[in-house]
Image 1 (cartoon, rainbow, N blue to C red):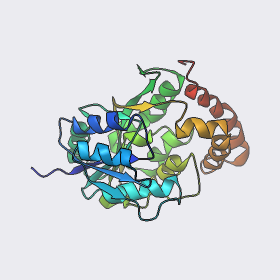
Image 2 (image 1 turned 90 degrees about the vertical axis):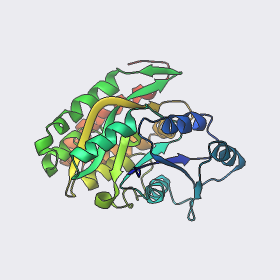
Image 3 (image 1 turned 45 degrees about the vertical axis):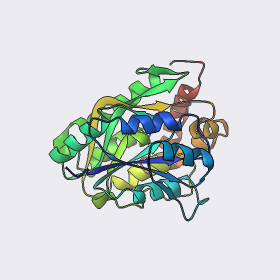
Image 4 (image 1 turned 120 degrees about the horizontal axis):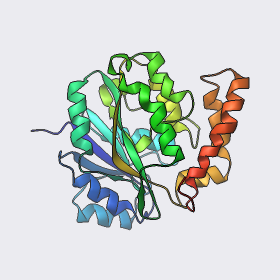
Length: 267
């Protein structure tokens, strides 16, 4: 049977975790198509691609920004369903199987996202303050009959970016491939979900933690937090859901969630 799902492994420079990511997407119960997309072609990526017999698709317009790299990755998938596999993350063997099953059940989905766990210091963390808050924010999407309404799709986004980007699969015929383009550095995913919440279709949430999001000192998120970029961009997003005075108050409390990226603590 022809696969309806593609993992696009988004490779950047020489990540020590890239091979683990590749192994995880190849070791799926549902056999997805796997390709590598990159804006930074190099021998390291080429060797891994050759080792696992994967095609490399080079971005013809590199350097425009993270959001544009993500959009390029989506365009590399030629199937109905596309997942951008971030090079530092891993996917449990049930991920693609569950995604495709839920798509068959809810063909009007815009995106399908799963629960996730964090990988800190080589350990899997299933529960901390940040993860528990996001689970609570995503609860409204469990009400399937309402998960296609604009109000319900925006509920999990009103108090923060509760949808983990690498856990998301895109239904390309609904989302298109221009989803992330913006000048933001951190909240490109939150902005993307805000935009998609206005489109017709459901946000389907699978609560099972089916992928691992790695948090480490060299990660883009950790770097952005140190530069205080995230706090500024968070405020811009909160203003899309709340009046400015309320947005300021929520942003003050929300920035405490950045502590979850502190590798010395398990909140």
